[in-house]
Image (cartoon, rainbow, N blue to C red):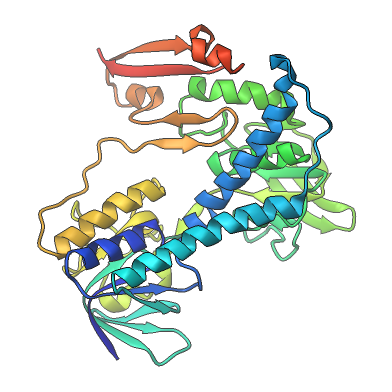
Length: 398
């Protein structure tokens, strides 16, 4: 049995930040991670590899449009193995860096799947290891949401993790879900040569943002992609020799179509129900989230929770701030998480970023407001780089 003052479940941005902050403040820390590499979804199969691929896409697109500036390149040759290797090299450097930071702080890293067996003990699956702790920080993250009726056993039906592997570039790719992750992957695969179709259940892309903020992106990709179907759902998906046959339900969508690959990107689900939290007495709600107070404390006084497993939005920068709060409270400091706004960004082309309440939310809540809008067509910087389709918007109390 290992005895420690603080144990952290999960080594994503929230988990390793919590572990390092607690160690810096003098605590003995054990960090449990189910996979070989530290960094969680964000570093290994999320934020970082996607940004590496998105930069590759940006280079390809800028080269293709450079004639506007009087510069013409020859035909672009894409080495998929090289693209993949660059992505993996970036991930490897960063995971190695986190490992070194853990070692420097004498944080004990245990590889395995940790589950509660009591309010003060965690067992590691497939081993005899048990960790007894004074305080625990749950940073067990989230997982890709999958629709059981879809044939995920066929490699041609991908989730976001599969898409980032970049095994090959399909000729025809369907993206199910017009949110941030789906559109970022569409940006990558479109630049690499795929013919893209996007299907979204809502009446706009990136439904959590104001429509006018998303419009510059929507206009650009409408010209680039084969189809974008809004107010449309996928009712059936079938693996055939010719490809993945998909049935649609929507006014503008065909009844059926066939694609070489399909990426299902409809969100993520918290892992609250996968760590036997009930054995520690920790409350998990019906959606799998673990409720906390502003100090990130659960209903069990010495157990805290942070990141995706706590609440929306599932964003790494939110988890990092929550991690510092939890670690500092455990160490006797006064700290709390009470964010007025949490920024969101879609690293598409063009990018879309927003923070604070949207116009839709203000109207629904009956809050009087005014707004100022600046079109980038009047921006010297935007004109100089040939990207004047954007806009900036500020909302303020009336």
